[in-house]
Length: 118
Image (cartoon, rainbow, N blue to C red; front, side, top):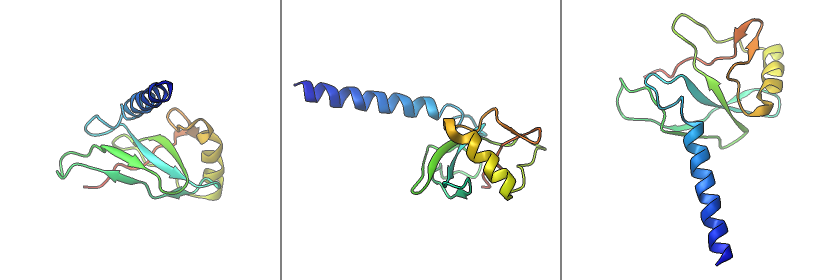
């Protein structure tokens, strides 16, 4: 009985954490997305479930098959993502230690990612 209670509590905690993590992804267009980073800070592809509409740019859920899952802001209109280079990857690796790049800057510019293309 205790085992059943512990499993139920773990499932509830996991589902509530997932709902909180996807708060910015539920907006249309999304204000944040998921990024997968390897140990050196290089970006790896995330696998995302998205709606079938070209107009709806939200992401329902994203997972990383490799690397660490990190929440990242989506670049605002007119804003560009920082160029991928060794210095940026090192800075991104350090900034992603807390699991998020939201609010982190690189050379005075947000560490954002380009919006998903339809």
